[in-house]
Amino acid sequence: MNEANATIFFVMGVSGCGKSTIGRLLAKKLDIPFFDGDDYHSSANVAKMSNGKPLTDEDRMDWLRTLNQLAIENMAHGAVIGCSALKESYRKLLEDSIFERVTYIYLKGTYDEIHRRMQKRSDHFMPAGLLKSQFEALEPPIEAITVSIANPPDIIVEKILRTLGKK
Image (cartoon, rainbow, N blue to C red; front, side, top):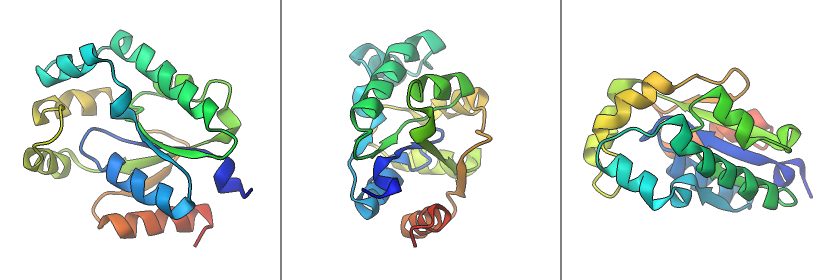
């Protein structure tokens, strides 16, 4: 088992930054499973966001605990999990009991860049109107692999792999 296969990678950033796309590509390259955090939101959270209302810290607690449990269940072989992880307090909850096994990958982009992307997508419950609230809540991580979203997905994944020493 190599080190990457014992790591939980959280691909993080505001909605629309590419967490699912990059997460899937990275997981494929590392030969570990990918889990989209959006799939683990409660129906109440999805309904709230679909109606243009931002989630509160309280709304996110059960979701974050669920993702932490998912990470713990996948520690033996590793996993990539896409999750906004906007605040430091959220990241502390995500890495509870597995801190030494977690690597954050922060997909960084400007509001304008991401807003343009979100306006083009039609298959997601998160409306572009909530992007401002995500940027307001965002506490950029200090300890993370930070990658600009300005490049195409394959180049972004290549940069992540180089940083991890995998390419």
